[in-house]
Image 1 (cartoon, rainbow, N blue to C red):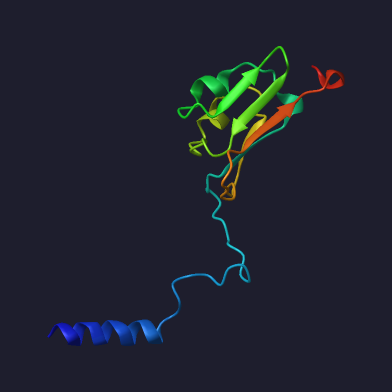
Image 2 (cartoon, rainbow, N blue to C red; image 1 turned 30 degrees about the vertical axis):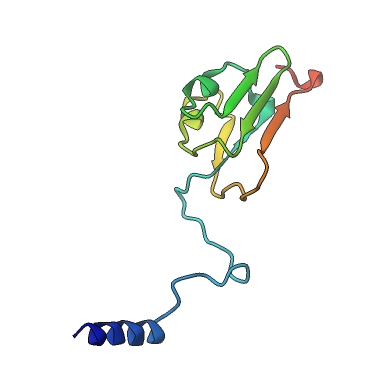
Length: 117
């Protein structure tokens, strides 16, 4: 009886479509509400620390004196809380993920003196 179930499963999987994509030939289509990589428009940032205070993983650091904003890409859990609390709406969530890596990835964005509000 068990071999009949296994035979039926094998025949169904042979006749059906593959469960995976043919990556990289077929690019992945991201859904509209996919949470992914956090991006910032540094020109609009007022360095208010709201995003860093709200981050549950502690992946964001804001330095008001040096006027820089940093994100630990491997520490970010893509919860989107920082995007929700940003008063200037300069943070956005891109619908793609940070590629896997063996090193810690920290992206630092610096506002130059000519761009200060």
